[in-house]
Length: 419
Image (cartoon, rainbow, N blue to C red; front, side):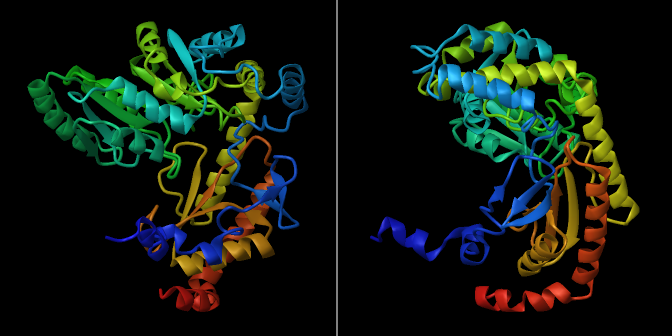
């Protein structure tokens, strides 16, 4: 018998093994200063492309005033206790009613955190007799939620309607035997690639199969659709989404999330959602702040218009310069390059130190070996000057990647890691 920690010490995982080289710079970096298009990293000014403040609400004076006033009036603790016991207020109810109306659903329920809440929603919706069918590229919170399921589950190939149909056939046969139902899960926007989920195609399959559809629209809420109600509105099928999930951590620049559906479903979740039944209520500072932010989403369409002006300028500029940005149909802007993990580290260091560009880096095991994904998140606060400087910087780093500069610079790191 071995000590439980032996494995942990010997194998730190595919990302953890890079900790000594990466921590504090490539992972767990510290951005400083007001949340904006330009911040400070290790004392240097950088253009920030890794902040999910899509509409630029985080640092607006009117938003900060509401947050500050709520903190002064209620403190960080109120209301104390879980919603079912002592943490319920009129403002929680007001926010839920306004959110439901905004996304065109009968009712909604607040969640303390998107990740935690989304896991719990999946767990509450299905029993051991039910079958889950979900997109293989779904977010980690969905995968972890599916892991809680004691029944059968199938993945379908990413955004592949034929694969979904085959798996629905399997699920239908199995559900007939178990006496259960089927839950299909997709995302409104896949946060790594930027592709919208094939929600319209999924909904069309309801004519052939009996299932309910759950959509995680963290990146679509506030950014897509005529009113900003998300990917379902963008694709014209919002009414056909049975359970709609979104977070406040992106467009709303806050903390918290919500689930929206028919009243009967929300009523059930209120009394069966373990992550909320046994957790402290969302503090008032976040509830009052979310009410303000939601009002701005509704009444200030110019914020979304400015966001998309920047998105189009950045994405069109990258494509004109021959960069591969995949098949994104959202604000999320991935740039795909070929190279090793050590090369990626050298490339990102060059971007930050010599060009003043801060963006997220994604490597194996999140994406296949040999690929480097630089993920840019445009916001309404970015300027055309930010975009021009970034395009020039990307042209420079691509040239250095192709001529072997980063390979030479990364040789020592690769040798140290045995790569």
